[in-house]
Length: 257
Image (cartoon, rainbow, N blue to C red; front, side):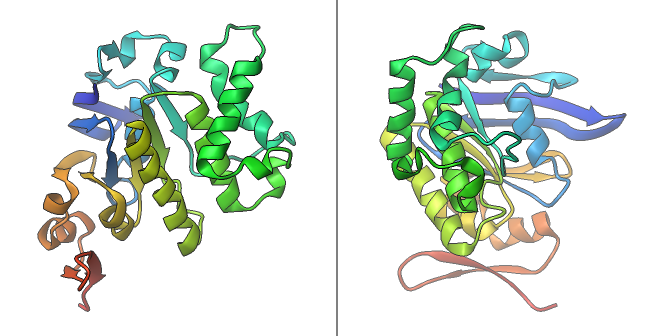
């Protein structure tokens, strides 16, 4: 099963933002959306999630047509992890994580023992079980992001959609979060579509890359093949080099003008 988009177009107030985008996101891999601010990364995530509806084109998750399906059906296939959750009410961590079970419950049903067990298992997976009784708004930014990932895992979907999940975090937490995401893809076979600002994070963790340029898919494919100096220079409109390190890793550097 894969997420597939064909010739998707979308605009706000007459301004086209996504211009005929076609791409695929496989299971069991991290697919990274790269592009400059305003290139359409967040909009594309919202389209795949069914929050926005394209003016034309199609988006499917396996056999499920996102545009023709009710929200609960889509939410059983893709779980969304935002940049940061601005809590209004003082939810406890476990209380917030168990909300991931909502797509599997009826309109008036309350989470049962099995739902709470799924939430605890997700917290164990991302290493935050010790925070279960804490107030969500009183823990650190890195911990809050792990709570949101745990909530998404509790949804038990084959795909995670992540909108710049490391943008507010320091270097250590950025790599810790992405290491956990990579482990989840390997152990659970979950497919991840993640929008990122930092191409070096994508180079370190992505299996596949989709480059968005002015709402169009500029390049897409395996990260090692797509993330070349030429493609990156065109994408970011600046001098860029990709250097190899002794241990086989690669690093993206900007060149002096």
